[in-house]
Amino acid sequence: FEALQLAVTFDEKTRVKMRLSFAERRLAESKAMIEKGEISKGTKLLEQYEKLLEAATQNFKKIDEKGKGVEDLAKLIEKTTAVHTSVLENISLKIPEKGKAAIDKAILASQTGMDRAADALNEPAIPIDLLARLNALRGQGIITQEEAATFTQAKSREEARKIFTNFVQQGVVPEADFKRFDTGQAKYFQNDFNKAVEIRKFNELVKFENQKPDEETKKQLEKFAATFKPG
Image 1 (tube, one colour):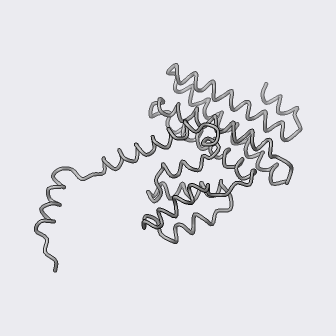
Image 2 (cartoon, one colour):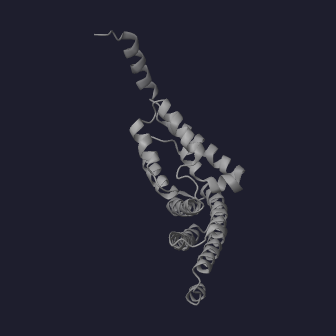
Image 3 (cartoon, helix red, strand yellow):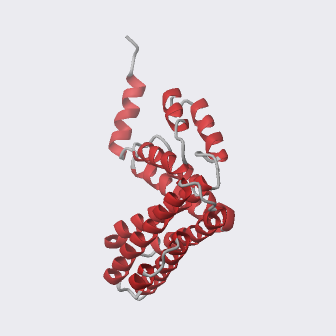
């Protein structure tokens, strides 16, 4: 029935709104399945959600590139994907490991939607507070001048997120700072945004703790430091 609705709808903006609505329906259905413990059904619905949302925001991007007035539609996508991001991040705290890949892809789709809306609304490629944080990291020597320059070369929010993703995976930029891209969520759901940032900080701390040397290694390091003589 949804495919038929799309087939007989010719207005581009209306088709984007319809796909947004269908994606929201899949997300609600997925959440219900996962909460009932039916993880396989829930993840299949998440995959459908991801495809619908990606199609909606990709089509929106094409409309924007044609120079058609999209401000109202951009604001709708910004708020809708902000809601979706909050819902998905809450689901991610409960879903078992076998569902993690599907939830991560769904979250990326919602974040990409926020990015495309931000670009259409002429927001800076790198959010202001993230740019300030990057300057602080550069001043501390955590990132190099060359790395900072790479970040600032991005011409869109969507492009900037992709660049940052690589640096997060390399451990150059903390995930908590990377979360600052989600300005739509921060605007409409500040508490959810702050919670997500704190969770990322906690996960980074746990990861750091797990990387500490064991007791035997620590003793050897202490012995080496105590007996070390320059030259």
